[in-house]
Picture 1 (cartoon, rainbow, N blue to C red):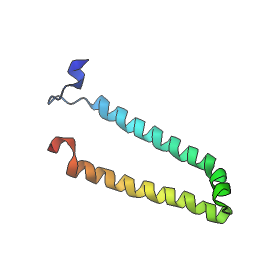
Picture 2: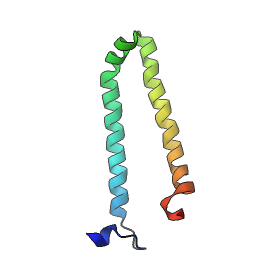
Picture 3: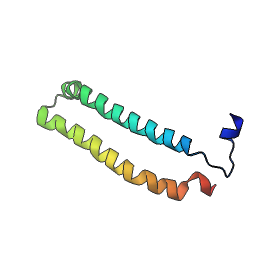
Picture 4: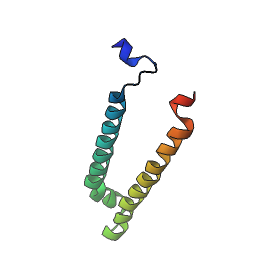
Length: 82
């Protein structure tokens, strides 16, 4: 087990695959939970359906921006650089 976690040149792609799957599952779960709570959020902020739909648009825009910036940050500030 210690051998798997050590920083050697023998990279283990299983950790990368697990990280990608975990990110995909958490992203899907977050979007589902936001969609479920959208009616409550509209009620709390006093928004109608048209105004409340902008909350979903804002969430999608934030995810789109973060999905495009994360690979760039990984290339520029990745663990291999330090």
